[in-house]
Length: 447
Image (cartoon, helix red, strand yellow):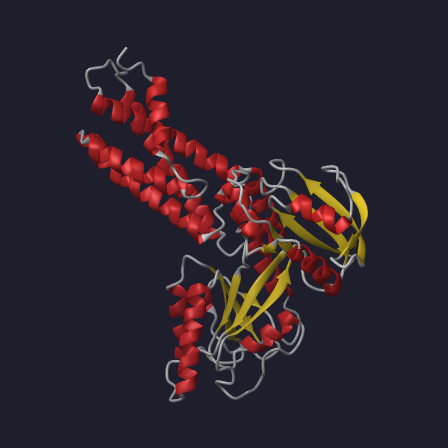
């Protein structure tokens, strides 16, 4: 499915660097490159050093040209890359020249879209390409590299194959009931359904645990007013990002910053102090935002004040933590440089530190939690779209079990078809001909 028009874009980040790359894809890519280089031919997949010229025959730059002949290219079309000296002005001049010779500006993601339309990549690989650019940890890069290699595609294809098997045999049982069919076929279908269900549930569980790995795990710092949340944020960032004051309610809004811990870049959220009664409307809004931040966080760091008696506001924090028992919670008893007054019996496991001194214990604990949630042995879905498709597939599989056991094969086939469509959305759309190929390829019907 080749496109009629030729597209161009600057493929490198804006700014000054050693090189910039201008990429052209489409039917006129080679023709345009020959005009700009004033060459009569360019050998595919050979780096060619050449001067580049504008329409007025003025030299723009000396560059390396790489030509990838269709269909052996990323998009499946002719692609030419101009590797020029870095700089905004040079790249813009090359871009303008390509446009003058008949190309048009590519839209966001259009090179990858053409690769998908020309069957060079599937949707899972396209998403991995997009996400690997935004990866916030080395573990995320490794995970996405596995998807680029086809791990998710293989996972989907295995499930598709089993679902097609079920659907084909079911359709045969409905339409060709007089034919001799294997007597154990429905036992095989029941076994396959159980394995698929377990596989989907395991994948969803692993993906939910690692949901923050691509965009960055979110860590919320919570506690009552004046417990040291802003001091902790400043210590983590190693500069004074948040205002520190003895006045309760100084932090009115959530403050979000990124910081690297170990191999992970995480989002640290300093929340407004949570207390039960305040007449300040702005502070009330800040407290509501704090509670939202807690709900969205992957890790919660809860601070308590070693130098103050435990009160109802501390109890409120403990109550909030109890409602988040499925999350990673790190309790910290702060201000250990002051005389101990706080009753810590109800805290359970906690860390003692002073934000005026060292917070290395907390950093190591956060790093340990991040490492535990970032293991890459299990298959992990990397987008909400993929997670939604697997959830819908699992739901259809579960709904198919009842009509299978009751012998209502038409309803069973309907739910299996829905599951096929949903799981296929991850890589490539399901076509009914695939089921027919299995059905007529494995059975001798009509003899």
